[in-house]
Length: 168
Image (cartoon, rainbow, N blue to C red; front, side):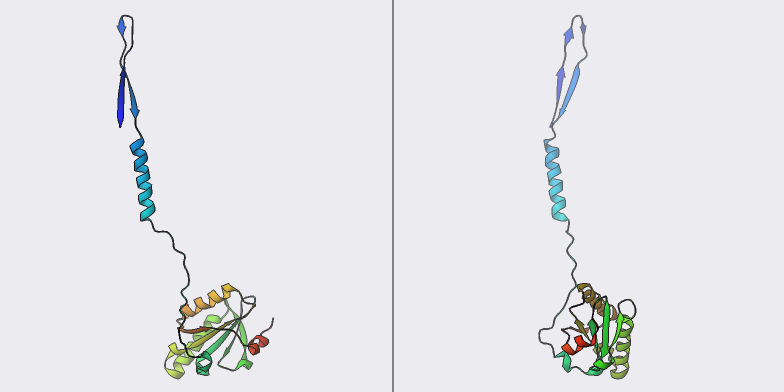
């Protein structure tokens, strides 16, 4: 571990002071350092990637066979535009975006279903991303579903008729 070396030199009549030289062996400190590094590596948890849980049903009923009064169709377009219509009435298609009013539209639909059927959790949202929408839009609309407590949501392809109705 450590060692002390005593050296004395005398020149002539007067004895010199003894000089003590110390030498510290750092090998145990290196071992301790590696043990500490190993301990901290094994005991820390790495930050796991955060991913959105998307639960897909195994055998779900066809969403097109749901009651039209309970559904709202959301078509995700380009430039963060959302085209929406209620039920099967595609002639009454309107547009909004994420910042202006999609949350209000979803809440209004939940309230409408709650008043009519006494079960607001039976609201069905059909999310239909087009080829012009971005991945960010899909994540944002799924976040809106979670924020508003919509448990019945379906991610599906838009029909040709729907694609023709939205401007490009």
